[in-house]
Length: 212
Image (cartoon, rainbow, N blue to C red):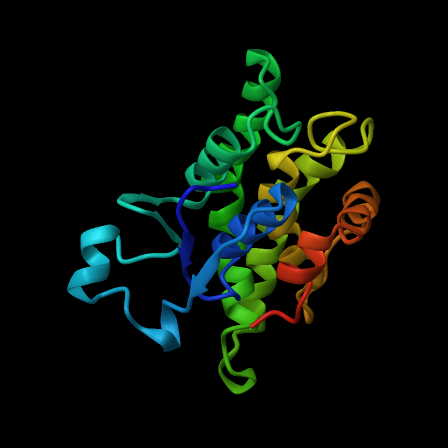
């Protein structure tokens, strides 16, 4: 258990905050969360900017230690408070395999996820441009086909064991397969895997609730 309180700054409906909260649940770590971002504000206040100059969420505070970037926070939690945990393996090649998927969510998934998610979930129905959203969804489908092919030969993103790769990719996959109003191709391996993730307590608590 941490020697000092773990505090997560960020609203619960942020995909990046959800990743961190799910990781905390997997590690069984206690924490407190402070709403920040969007309707809650705070991220542009001087005290917050002193912690996170990006004015974004999440931010982790542990005593006098501050860390931002959700994937970096998950790695830290595993190294500092879950040493030896199978969700972030020690072996260099296994760890690198996990890390590439964390990087992939930022470099490849997030850019195609955002216009679809925001175009529907965070845009009023009367203001939605569904022709543009469907074009964005078609681009996203090509990216998600990569994960679907990966999962054709294994139960989890990096093989037989659940890892941080499943948290990072799974949080976005919930949005991709959960958003309504678009046409997307059947991706049975992705669908099967997401259903399996849905059985995990951390997913059920932090990722599965209605999107907003």
